[in-house]
Length: 433
Image (tube, rainbow, N blue to C red; front, side, top):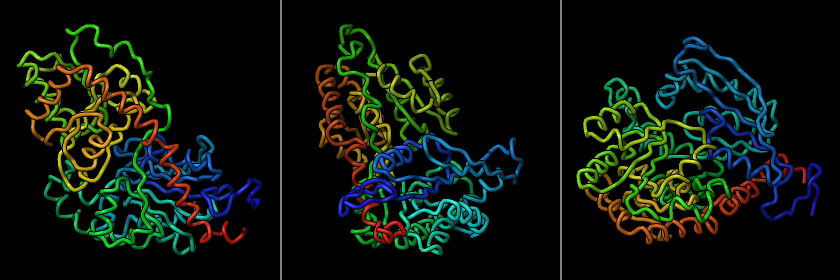
């Protein structure tokens, strides 16, 4: 063993104590669960992390239309450079792959951050901040990890704002696709969320397989463990409605309309179900109006957004977790965070046939699968759960065991530390050992 910054390092293994990472992202931190779990994993391995993040003031009320303010804070041993930016910069960020103005504005701020942090490598999250971050890191001869939380070019056409003509004219998904390919090719390592996403990157974007790892959005061990013998799930009262749960972004592309129409179908058929909608989106009012027109407002608890630490409470109160994603190039290759949250809490799941999540449910025998967007297919699977409570609880138990044995950060996090170890010889820290 060798010593590195006062901590032991086992060379040739995923022990990377003494390294320093600079993470860069364009969303607030916290509450991003993926970034939080990555940081915790790295800290446990002895890596110190500094973080640059942008908090957009989308209303313009606090900072004004074009205002900015840099705030340096500390959260759970992470030094954070928090750039507060007004609505103008938020709007301009949407054009990052159409015009270089946003990246030109951002690059000096990232350069100041890296000069102060003096990291061994740079870990960039997603595509908006990547051009500026990549350019500055490469000029400083720092290795770069590109962490893509989603296939943004594939999901971009389905965003509500992209339904407007001016948005479609200015924000071209093909430009985003070309930029994503170039960014992946330029990065030293790439992190994707599913094996399906990796297959696409290798075939479509010609990314070398050895530079890509898969890091799914699994849960931290124990965070959603609501107890293996929850008395509320014992089914002692067969007349009690089946309690359905949906967590996360409630946008229509997530299949939320399919849920509401399935609840209507079941209510008409006198099948007892209730639904908790824990989340929000710009399309929330549309969903409220739809529920009212369907006559099912009294069947739904509209919880809205809650802090991540509160989510286990809603999982504990539910019987079945729903992930009815509609089919598209992104949803077909992703795992929604909610899927692992349901499973960790011992819930059986009902998912649409998007390949990544459907394959997971089949392999773990932890739920049922319906055709995406098919109201009657979803209603039929929910009805199956009502009619087969014992089988449903067995699925939930298998889901919990799958999380404990395979799908949690104590296991998948090793891929991240191994990735950092693979870059150590390219860093300043590696040259010192």
